[in-house]
Image 1 (spheres, rainbow, N blue to C red):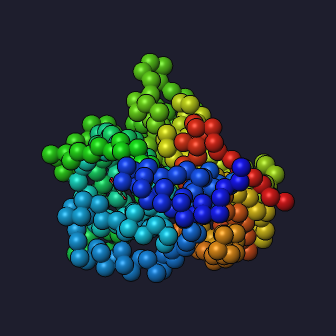
Image 2 (tube, protein in one colour):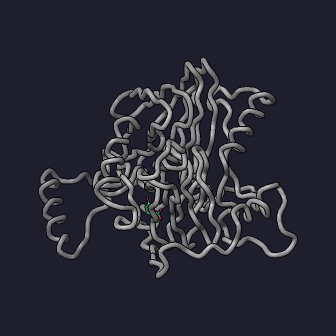
Length: 362
Ligand code: GTQ
């Protein structure tokens, strides 16, 4: 029997009267709960480094790294303001450390990746080992490991134009929104400002960084890579060699994923970083993927064309700019001059759940 004419009013009455019992009808929301395809609330966004940098330096004058604990400007998705998120699952920020400063030791269950944007001479310490940061280095802080950052440079007072006396800025990528979603975040401050150095710089690289591994003893950080600095000099050389030996991919240019050398999988359980090179004159094809991506432009310049539900967008990017491409919004890359791009996504989590999809468009 068809629903009688007064049904709409009667339905509203039903909804209203069940509401105090915290009940709500599925059929009013089903289409949005189980959409035919992803409909991300995120929007594409571009942060030009020349616009962002002055605010970072002003922050550097107003608060020390120690007082701030981490002096970071969060890159917030314009459609997720107040949530400290660049996509629904990922956090990104730009962290500044000045010569002479220390960002004190703490640990948390959130995993972090760093990608060095500007400056040399700062270090990050993980589990008793320090690694010196250079532009383009990809660095890991495994979940629940003690970490502090510092910059031993002499600072403005002793500045002689030495590069070790310059500010250092890096991109922080963390799985903060993911852990918040699971209500599984823990954190602890260390009584020591800087952790004691117990291993010489390069110890992790020596044991795990040469497609070899120690005969005894296994993964010191569980599912996270035992290498915590992937230096740009080496990853850039890998792209160079790829360029000389491998055909160009029409969508990606030459693109590599960073791996955990012990597993061949992602370097950390929640995030997958990538490095790619687009040659001069590259005019790439469009693709979309369910893992929203955060990009840091390493070298050169180019254009990103993104098909968002709000309409097509065009981002002109250059070195040190950052941009975000939400889930399932088609991206096409072009570069007149050639460029190198770093990016990261939540792909390992989607792959673990068996839900990752990618579609390469004609
Ligand atoms: O360096 O430990 O951007 O704990 C946000 C939270 C950086 C860090 C961030 C953090 C860190």
